[in-house]
Amino acid sequence: MLKLGVNIDHIATLRQARYRELGPDHPLSEPCPVQAAHQAVAAGAHSITAHLREDRRHIQDHDVLRLKRELQVPLNLEMALTPEMLHFALKLEPAEVCLVPENRLEVSTEGGLNLPPLIEAIRQANLDLSKNGTRVSLFIDPVEEQIHAAHACGVPCIELHTGCFANALDTKTQEEELERLRKSASLAFQLGLQVNAGHGLHYRNLRLFLQTPHLDTLNIGHSLIAHACEVGLREAVGEMLSLMRDGHHGKSEE
Ligand code: PXP
Image (cartoon, rainbow, N blue to C red):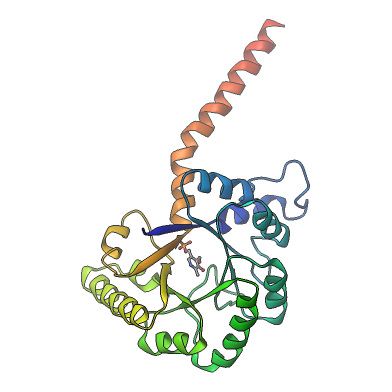
């Protein structure tokens, strides 16, 4: 069965935009990414992804600690391969770690890892993390060289970057990108790697993307959270209006 991993980073982005200074224990601090994770799981999500970035722009350490404590589904920790993050992940022991490139100026992860120069470092990190039962995945572009390098790293899993497919505006480019993903997924599968995918997948491009073979898990964030805002806003406005009506009514009766 194809599995869905829900990325909750954008919930934290919204919270940090308002409550960065007040801290997590402030009673008004909302929305809560951990609560969002529980809702996603209640709706059937198979895993939860959170990216603890070096600059802590959205998800915070305390969010990840709570997710690890409270979740009944696997936690997929996205992180850069730095000594600080490796230390954090070795202590946390999440079910999965997805290694991603990090660039301070990017809005969101922009490309896959360039693996060949990193093979030795990743081999060692994978040995250390797997001793704790953590499965390591590598976020890479759908490129043959990267898939062979992922295999050489000894990790069990890759996540194919679907951004170029998602950003393609015309049918020809979309087909070309899909073909790259199809070939890459087949090669990875032949090499014994679990194939995950993510970035930019949304309600409209999913059906076409699903022509990619051997998929295990799709990690999706932005379009889910955006859609939740759209479909949830009606209820939220309705509740506020109802409170206003009640309060106003009460006042005029005094
Ligand atoms: N997979 C990885 C490795 C990511 O870094 C992200 C977020 O940038 C996603 C999946 C989810 O992408 P999106 O938010 O576009 O669905």
